[in-house]
Image (cartoon, rainbow, N blue to C red; front, side, top):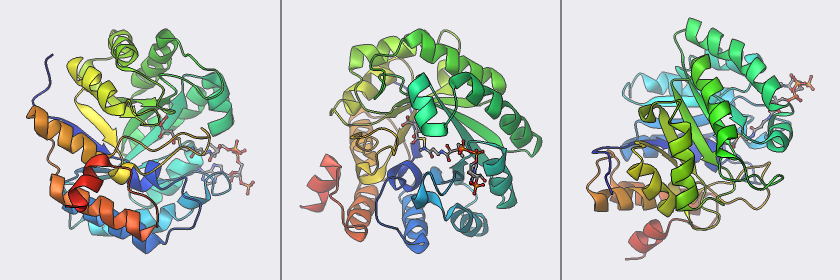
Length: 303
Ligand SMILES: CC(C)(COP(=O)([O-])OP(=O)([O-])OC[C@H]1O[C@@H](n2cnc3c(N)ncnc32)[C@H](O)[C@@H]1OP(=O)([O-])[O-])[C@@H](O)C(=O)NCCC(=O)NCCSC(=O)C[C@@](C)(O)CC(=O)[O-]
C-alpha cells in the first residue's frame, strides 16, 4: 500500500456531529467546542449549517455561531470555519456573517435528495449553481458534498457511476473539493476503493475528500482504502459525534481521535494532537451527556 505524506482533516463535529442531537445545545457550548478543536490543531472546522430551522432545529443558531467565530477568526486566522448553505437564502445569511467558506450538499440517490433537501438531484444542481457563482463572486470558497456514495437508506446499492456524475457536476460548477459521504456507513474497503477509482477518473484525487460514517464499524478500513488510492483529505467528528437526521439509524462520522491514531501509526502528518483531541472528545461527550464513540478516545481517557 502507498499513502500520502500528509492528510488534511476537516472536523465536522460541530455541524455533522451536533445536528442530530435531540436536546438543545447552548451556543456557548458549540463555540467552546470549536475553540477547543482549534486548540487541538484543527485548521478546518465545519462550524454551522445555514439550513431551515424547521428541518434541523439544532442548527438554528447558525448566525450566532458564525458571527462569534468571524470575530474570533481574527485571533485564529489560520483556521477555516465553514458552513453548509443549501440555497441562496442560506448563502446570503452566511455572507452577512462574513463566512469565508461554504458547502453545498447533494446526493447520489434520488430518494435521499428528496428527503434531505426536498428536491431531485437535477433540481439540487440547478439550485447550487447560483450559490456557487455568488459565493465565488464574493471571494468565498465552495466545497461540495455527495451523500449516499456507498449506499442509501432508501434505495440500497448506489452505482459508482452515479456518484461520479454528481461529483463531476459539483466540481465543474466550481466546488474546489468534493467530499464523498458514506452517509449510512455501509461501505466496505473494496467498494470504497472502486468508488474512488471511478470518481477520480473525472476529478483529480487531490480534490476529493473521504467523509465516512462508522455505522458498521468499517470507516477506518474504508479510509485505509481511500488513503491507498491517494485521498489526502479526511472528514471526521470528534468523539464520533453525529448521525444524519434523514438517515435513520446512521451513526456519526468516523471519530477524529481514531483517525489521528491511525494516521500517527502510519507516519502520516495531520497537524492534530492526539492527546488534546482525545481530551476534547471526552469533554464534549460529558458536556452533552452522550457516550464517547471514539475507541481511541475512551482508551486514552480511561488510562
Ligand atoms: C434545503 C431546504 C431549506 C429546502 O426546504 P424547502 O422547504 O423545500 O424550502 P423552501 O424554499 O420551500 O422554504 C420553506 C421554508 O424554509 C425557509 N428556508 C429555506 N431555506 C432556508 C435556509 N437556508 N435557512 C433558513 N430557512 C430557510 C424558507 O424561508 C421557508 O420558511 P417559511 O416561509 O415556511 O417560514 C430544507 O430542505 C433544509 O433545510 N434541509 C436541511 C437538510 C440538512 O441540513 N440535512 C443535514 C445536512 S446534510 C448531511 O448531513 C450529509 C453530509 C453533508 O454530512 C454528508 C453525508 O454524510 O452524507
